[in-house]
Image (cartoon, rainbow, N blue to C red):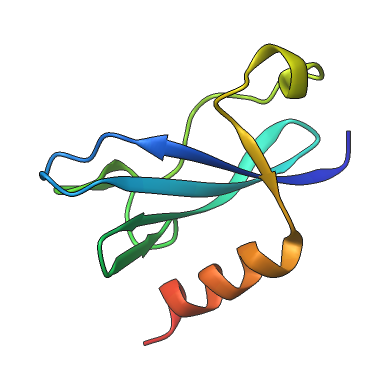
Length: 90
């Protein structure tokens, strides 16, 4: 399967809308950036954020996710890496 980057909406514990972009390697989640409003949290920050919830999805990505899970959107590596850099910059 290789490496793919997937965006999906989340329901944060705050009123703001949010989404996450996750890197999957051979179907397993490895890195994730969660975005709510102006705040970005990486999966390096903690296992769970009080506002966002889990910072790395526990769900594996099935081979047929593109047809079976229309709520997931593939994004490019560049988009993910830009978000990752912004989320991990200190």
